[in-house]
Length: 114
Image 1 (cartoon, rainbow, N blue to C red):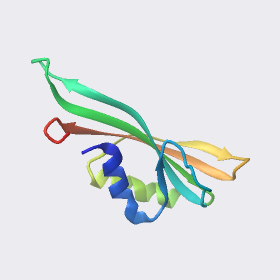
Image 2 (tube, rainbow, N blue to C red):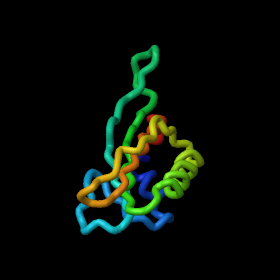
Image 3 (cartoon, one colour):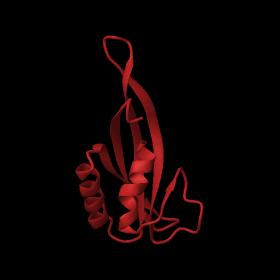
């Protein structure tokens, strides 16, 4: 399993276009960009990696009120046992007319799952 795969599976049912890194097509009125942030091994006393911790940022771009979608995404993520480490309003982009809202997340995977 991987965080990117899990996120795409979890978020596909809400019907908003999702891409990784950058949105490459003509952007619709709302879309999500997933940016991988870190992928690290977690070690214990035996110096063996027992888990993988993956972090990513979900950047929500929307031309209308972002609050309902922010709440929906938060519920989906928490229900899937994904840890939300930060949520913040990045700002309104005057040139594109999008609100930009970011949700930073992490998920730990056991090495057997990875």
